[in-house]
Structures are given as C-alpha cells and as structure tokens.
Length: 119
Image 1: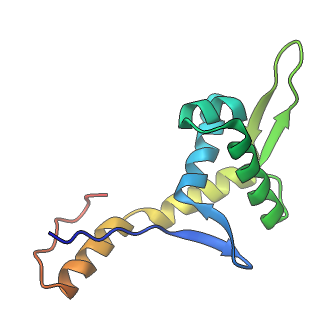
Image 2: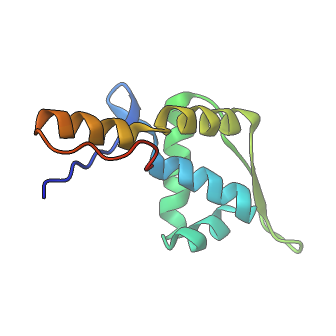
C-alpha cells in the first residue's frame, strides 16, 4: 500500500535553520545539559551536534545555546529563551501535519482516510 512520507524544514536564504531533527537536538541539549550529552543521547558525533547548533545560530543571527567551557567542574549548555521559543513554535507548526498529509494523500489516491490524531 502506498504510504506518504514528508519531511519539513525552514530555511533562510536556501540554508536549513529549523527541522524536526534540529528541534530534537535542541531538546536533547536541554535535557542533557550539554552538547556532548545531547550528542550521546542522539547517537551522533559531538562535532555534528556542535556544527548544527553553530549553523542555526549563524543563519538566525541569534544565540540559541549558552555553552560553558569545561574545566574542573565540567562544561555544560543551556538553551536561550529564543531557542525555547523556536522549539515551542516548531512543535505547534508540526502538530497534526502527519494526519493532514495522510488525509490529503488518501483523498488524492482514493484510499480510506486514516483516523484523525495518529501523529
């Protein structure tokens, strides 16, 4: 059976700034309290996590993560209020998209529509 798949992201000047994966990265930093902890949680290299945060901040021209350099007490990272706001807005945007896409796909292909609220 045909099943639709979709991936959404937001760009500035053709460059990705926000996506579901990037919002998950921000969330993981929030939970772990560090970029390295978030990278471990997502099973990605630290360098990739750091690069994606840096890209988002550079493209937005705003700081999203306040990182403290390690030392005797270790480093850490916290999200800025702006990062939390972007996460909230992305989740609001993303909520219900899978259901909407499945319904539109079903209508276009004359399939039985899935029940609402399956995201």
